Image (cartoon, rainbow, N blue to C red; front, side, top):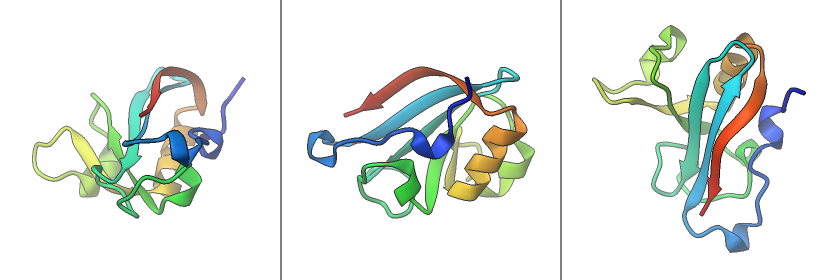
Length: 106
């Protein structure tokens, strides 16, 4: 069963000290880490209680993603300030989320 991206990370902000980290796998095997909090390259740069409250997110993946190239700063292994609609389109392009590997709300 496919998980909808914006349904992830609905958290109680009162229990969230630092941020949200989700590592997910898409139907075609593509895996990506999605991060947001006051320490990450996201907007707003604060800890909120769900991905749908952000305009942009920090993305990490071991694969080069051509459509995210403009969000990468040099050789850093992350993509900064990726618009939430771009993240959602990327996940859909890879068949949608089918598995959550490692998820932390800390």
